[in-house]
Length: 187
Image 1 (cartoon, rainbow, N blue to C red):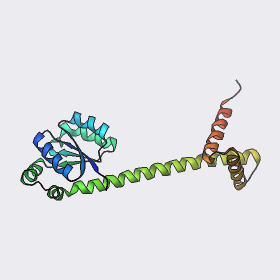
Image 2: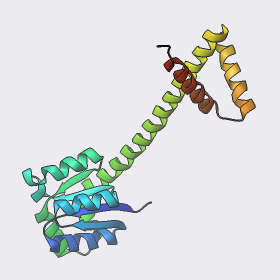
Image 3: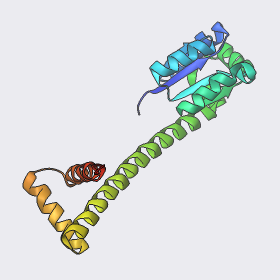
Image 4: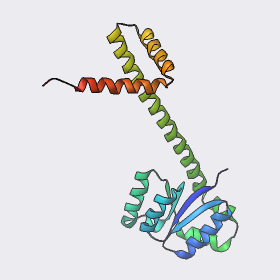
């Protein structure tokens, strides 16, 4: 299991110190911030899997912090400062804290799922874009050489092989050249 990156944000230094020690013992990579400004700076550099905000940031003061975290795609969770204080002062057992806050583990699992979904979306978007470029070039070849779709595709594929270049790269080069030619007009 990979080490989870957490950012703890609280204006209470005792809670930050105590909670960070417990989470480090639970095999988490932990950074702390005592202010929203510091939290934003650390979040940009550290890219945490999850930001834990004490509930004192659940107001207008913390709205710009949560808005920025949301816009960047960083998951955050509000935690109750009083419960953390109670558990962290009475126990050195990191499992007890994580049992008290099962939302941390659930949210970390969601973060992993969301990250995977975003990566999949990017791959599919790239595949769709590549497919569109190839399809447009096949259409150009069909029009120019009066070919059927299969013949135009085979012509493009053979050309890519002879030039030892990927099909999508050749298609993009052809499309770029076509756009340049179409942009040249007599005045």
